Image (tube, rainbow, N blue to C red; front, side):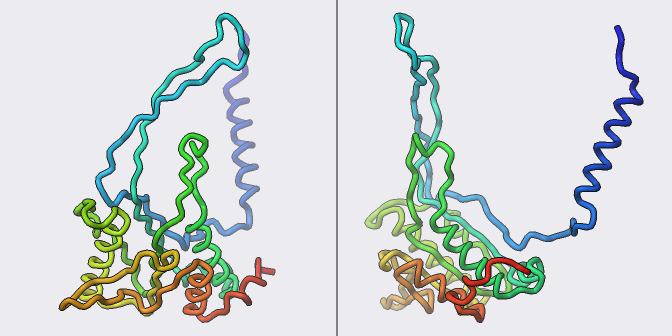
Length: 239
C-alpha cells in the first residue's frame, strides 16, 4: 500500500516542537511553586462502605430497565489537611508585590475553608466546612500529621473533638521540643471546639489568638504579615 515517507512525519513533528518552543519563548520556565499541599488523611480508622447504584434507561418501553449496575467504594471520615505557603517565594513569584501576596494568602485561606471537590457530589453531597483551622506563621513548616499515627478512637468525645484533642497535645509536644511559632491562630465556628491541653489539672489554650469566624481569622492572619485585609483586597494583579 501507499504510505507517507517517514521523513515527512519527522518534519511535521519537528515543526510542532518548534511551535511549542515558540509559545514559551521569553517566559520564565523556572518558577518555583510557593504552595505545598499534602493529601488529606483520616484521623481515625476509616472503614470503606459500598454505594450500589444503577443507571436507568431514559426511554420507556418494554425493554426499559437498568442500563448499568455498579458499586462504588467510599468512606466517611474526619480529615486532616495540611498546606504550607512559602511567603518569600510567593512574593518573589509576584515580582515583589507584597500587597498582592497578602491578598493571595487571605484568599487562599478562604478558598481552602470553603471549596469542596465537585466529583460525585450528586451522589454524596459532601458539603462539610472544617470544624477547626490552625494557622501558624513560622520560619520552618511543620506538619502535624503524626498526631494521628495512633488513630483516633471515639469515646466520651465525638471523633471531631477527639481529633482536635490529639492535635492539640501533639502541637504542645512539638512546641516543647522545637519551640513555638511567631504567630498562631485557631478558628472553630463559634469556638465550638477549643484547641487546648491540660497540665496540672489546668486547661491551657494552644493558640494565642482564638477566633469564632472565618471573617475574623483572615484579617488577623494578614495583619500578622504586616498588611490590612481591607486594603490588600483592592489590589488584584500586577501592572
